[in-house]
Amino acid sequence: MNNSQYEYITTLQYRNKALKARVEAFENGSMYKKMEADYNSLLHTEESRIHKLEVALSKSHAQTVDVRNIWWEVLEDVFKEHEKENSAYEARIKQLEQRVLEVERQRDSALDAKKELRLKLYEALTELEEEKGKNMHLKAQLNRDYENSSKPSSQSVNHKKITNNREKTGRKPGGQPGHKGHGRKKQELTQPVIYLPAPQEVLDDPDFKKTGKIIKKQVIGIRLCMDVREYWADVYYNSQTGERRHAEFPDGVNDDVNYDGTVKAFLYLLNNSSNVSIDNAKDFLSSLTKGRLNISKGMVSNLNKQFSEATEEQRKKWFVDLQRCPVLNTDFTNARCDGKNMEVAIVASPDGLTQYYAREQKGHKGIKGTPVEHYQGILVHDHDITFYSYGSDHQECSSHVLRYLKDAMENEPDRKWAGKMRALLQEIIHYNNSLDYDADPDAEKVEDFEKRYCEIIEEARNEYLDVPPSKYYPEGYNLFKRMEKFMHNHLLFLHDKRVPHSNNLSERQGRKVKRKIGQVMTYRSFQSLVYFCDGLGVLVSLREQDPSNIYTSVSEIFDGKYRWSD
Image (cartoon, rainbow, N blue to C red; front, side, top):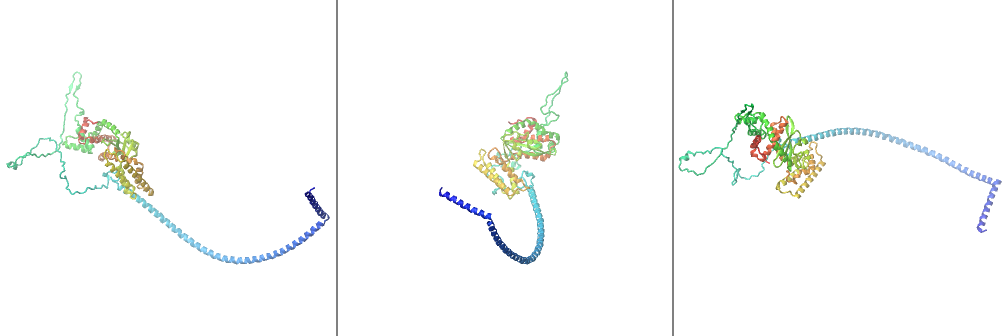
């Protein structure tokens, strides 16, 4: 057995011995008595301590009651003071509330009055703005003339006098020294020469001798003489068959009295070219013949139909020629028929060929049946969207755009884009007109023009973003949008020398229809308008070919003898 085990057993023995002693103490009761004595001693000590604590607690409670009573007294005094102050504050608050209510009432009254004034001001400003807009609209209408709109000069109230911008040279009016004069053209003689006898004083004075020089002066007059031809044809009778025969009369000799092409051309040109009414035309012819020729109104009216039928084949050829032209000018103009508005389509080529087509309305139905319907070249026209469905390319009339820009300048003076664009277009047109016929425009110059055009369009956009357009004058804004979208069609003439910058050709040809409509006012039937348009196109084209021979040409057409040039 080693030391550790020995120590462990010894420790257990001591512990066992101690435990046995404690068990014996409990068994004989001595331990219980000791524990009871210890408990009683501890209990007495604790009771004594509790008693002391209770006494201290009693004293503390008495002090607490005293403090509480003192506190309540103080609190009551404070409360009474607070109540007094609170009453004063409540009175002050009530007074202030009354003042606040009075101030709020006054404020509400002021706000109501302000609101009424604001409403009245708003109504006044709105009404003023409306009146300004109406005034702008009426002013724009009143100021529109041939310079800033499509209105013709004959209908413009503000028809301005054309100023003389020539510089004074100090020279006398008339022909200048050294300038070859343009005298009246002498004509071939139709009568024998009339020799004037010498003055009697010359004959009586032997000192006067002939110089061999003759002064010649003509007197030209006109006279109308009727050329009446009468055809006779013997009638033959066949006794066997009962048949009667005679020689054939020439073409056109059908009635007992017939009028040849000279009479028909005279009346036709008076009525359709000079725009003389049927009554005045036949009365004028009657007065020229001293009453011998009294032609009926029906016959004069029927001349349109005869001329249309006589030129039908040639108009068909011209129709094909127009379709072959690389560039065509086209437009519509208004006419009247049986009290209703009708349209006349105008198709003209730069080489002078022009045709008119009567239509019941504009648009695609109006274009149907004209050379424009299946045209594949470049169309020059005003801003009619319908035309963009035809042709291969388009040039818009710059003359119209210049007038519209001037209108925008006058009615929107605060905006600068319209004036700049108008000046640019005028510069472009002047540059294009200054080029030789065979010369092409400089590419850099064209690029610069287009760049400046785009810059002005951008300036216009910013101006309308800053200040929106007036509802009473939207034309300026609409023009800006149109020039932005159709820039290529406004500047096409810069890229193709064949294309004119304006549609003035159609405009000029349209005036011929306007003058006739102004004289006739309204046609009785649509077919009459068709006949007039057919004949007018022929007259215009014949004048372009030979303006000095129009009467003879029309006479030969009526007689069926005219030879059309290829």
